Image (cartoon, rainbow, N blue to C red; front, side):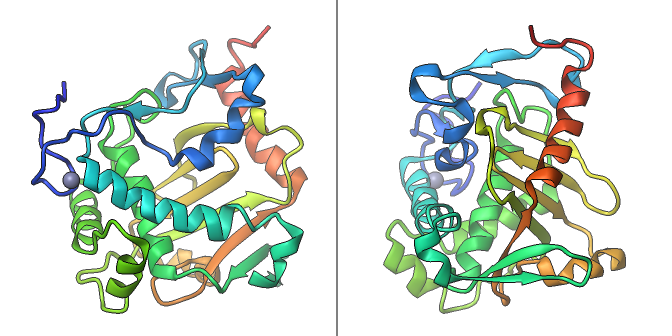
Length: 271
Ligand SMILES: [Zn+2]
């Protein structure tokens, strides 16, 4: 049991005095609970998909995993991404910030030229790392390897700044060592019913290490440099290339979600 006397898991220096740290950034999970008057979500454990889910009114939080300044650092990264990506990507008034593309196979994606790929990588690192270190409900059974966890922690901590301009200034210089993982972040063209989305994780098919379902986003991650992943390289956002966000059609999004819901609810349909 972590207490205010525990040490912050990121800096490993300060007391972990922050209470109620969100595991997945709040801006990403807000819409899953529906309208504020009707807040209702389902919590499921990935290794107990056959059990009846519980209701919840907030996304996972945990106290005493971070110190207040490390939490502030994560909020700087999240504010940058929510302002420049999440709040603009579906907004017709901001489409000049995004370049639409389509691969030969028909995958639609947007290049987010205004977003610093290093901040974006730090953002994804921070989510994967928090999901792994937390013992909160949804991700209690999700663990990445110790080696990967430490690589991410050291990279995140080495550029820790609590003001956005200071972080951007620091990122003009290399992060060393910079973990090089495969990430693909996808979303949908629009969401007919956001409250039917999910926050959970699953084993990934093929050569991916795992997949995180984060409400309106799906994040595929691989820690291995498997040659078969090269076909997705044009969608991978590493620290040197532009940020890309895959746009699934509503039909494809619903297929992915329904396949997951089917696994979860097949034994215990919600009345
Ligand atoms: Zn700290």
